[in-house]
Image (tube, rainbow over all chains, first blue to last red; front, side, top):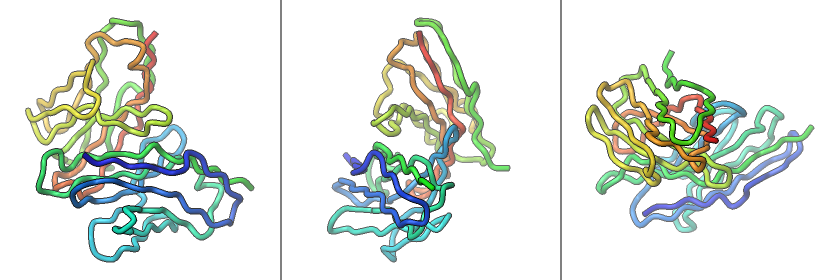
Amino acid sequence: AQSVTQLDSQVPVFEEAPVELRCNYSSSVSVYLFWYVQYPNQGLQLLLKYLSGSTLVKGINGFEAEFNKSQTSFHLRKPSVHISDTAEYFCAVSRGAGGTSYGKLTFGQGTILTVHP
Amino acid sequence: EAQVTQNPRYLITVTGKKLTVTCSQNMNHEYMSWYRQDPGLGLRQIYYSMNVEVTDKGDVPEGYKVSRKEKRNFPLILESPSPNQTSLYFCASSLWNGGNTEAFFGQGTRLTVV
């Protein structure tokens, strides 16, 4: 089975400061990794994903994430946040092909990012 | 416009009264699923469907039913709702490509069972 742990439930930060949202996963097989964002009263939308290749992936709105296989981590970063980045962020994993339940997304608990002026 | 549409957005019901939450997607996606979102628990998968007439349980299926008679629709049925099913529900769809494709989510249905 796979699992995802987001290490911070809430992250407050001032506008234009850098931010890192931490995500660790556990799986006995290869996985695909995702970050989704949920703005208030909306559904989730994809920020970025790691499938293979370069361990640094860039997404929308200036976010990027780095896959670290040895530490089983996929932390999300942004060098300078805006008020509009205030939202809840979810890390998710999907098991790679070759076994049962592949395609299913397993989500972390979510991290609420609050950007203060 | 590519989208996943859920209805209703908000629903208050009483214990035991059967209800259905509809979900429809216009992207011809094979894979559809239902999640519930609870504070501190993230999203947990209730049921999923890999194609028409192919459905299976997710992590928290108790008290729910689904059907997939058409590719675009994937309704969630609560035969006898209970207060512990009060939650925010999301429907999602994606291309079936081994799990490496983006999932598209509906706007959510906030259900309260009293």
